[in-house]
Amino acid sequence: MGEHVGAELELEVSNVAHGGVFVTRHEGRVVFVADTLPGERVRARVVDDAHDRFWRADTIAVLTASPDRQEHVWAEAAVDRAPGERAGGAEFGHIRPGRQRELKRQVLEENLRRMAGVDRPVPVAALPGPEDGTGWRTRVRLHADEDGRVGPYAARSHRVVEVADLPLATEGIRAVAPLGHRLPGAQGVQLIHPSTGGARLLPAGEDAGEAITERVGEREFRLDAGGFWQVHVAAAATLSDAVSRAVDGQLFDPAAANLDLYGGVGLLAAAVGDRFGPSTRITSVESSPRATEHAHENLADWVGATAVTARVDRYLSRLAGSASKAERARLQRGTVVLDPPRSGAGKDVVRSLAALGPAQLIYVACDPVALARDLGALVRNGYEVTSLEGFDLFPNTHHVEAVAALVRT
Ligand SMILES: C[S@@+](CC[C@H](N)C(=O)[O-])C[C@H]1O[C@@H](n2cnc3c(N)ncnc32)[C@H](O)[C@@H]1O
Image (cartoon, rainbow, N blue to C red; front, side, top):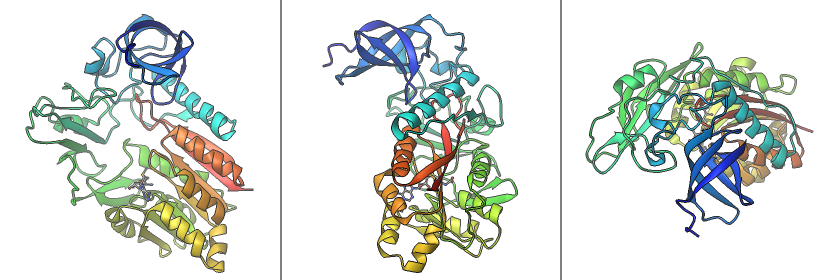
């Protein structure tokens, strides 16, 4: 292995794969290629031949362009730069926005069909904002290399590339980003642009205790400046609406043991509470103690809302093991919202959920493969998918968000 790295191949692109790369074949072997799209013919250079069944390659020239190819929204990420010099984080920026959403839809649908046996359309909706998918990012991390040069990492690497602009970021972030500066000795910076107050710069890695306020509709949420918040300017409102809509009102019991798992500062618990009123009982479970402190404050309008600091897997296995008969019955009448990180909820959490048997689940996912894996396990354990929606929360990247509703059968 290794002897093919550097080889240049002419490849026909047939399909989109998970992870922002595209499927081609060379002498019977799959080659995953970046910076292209289906229908194109490209010259690509092999960068990884370590696996038996597939290689990876970078596009170095487009021989036949797709009609859906556009000028890249970020010049410094475009295919006319050497692959190692292309800025990372905008790997779909060369594709017309409508086609980007079609490709994301395809990745969602194919994984759900293959891994979960769920065969249904999952259209991916655009969020409000510029049609070219720029100006949405309210959180940006820039890195500094050993010479203090500041910038994003190059695609699929940990090499800092210097850039003149950050077109996916909000205007506010673009104005304060220290592009072209040197930060010797620093790891990098985090740039954040809350919906109240201006954009600001935090040293990377610092657990900034400073609190900020995010506004979603009429409601305000307090959180740490460096803490988790949905990244797209319109994401928090979009997901709140989607989750609220996904809950089946006939199955919802405000007095049941409702849960908001991976709750952060309580955004989705509040969405459920806003729909079902001040008596709604819901517990937000989150591993970050700082986030749960804020969640307590953010959920103060609901007397039945609480936030606990715990790992979801441990919290649920404890419940599954030790809940009283009455508590078990309240859990079975409950609605569970879960919004796990990219790796998904995983086997243990799914097993506990299946054992506890809540009436309905609303699964918010940022990774189609992890979603499909977990939905597959839930479907095999007595749940049925009743709705599925996709959202283009990360335009010009390959990332996509989905909200699935499941009911116990
Ligand atoms: C995708 S975020 C969702 C947060 C929140 N639902 C929102 O929309 O703002 C996932 C959250 O899960 C938390 N988290 C990650 N792993 C966890 C675990 N094993 N148990 C509990 N929380 C976890 C993270 O700290 C983060 O706040």
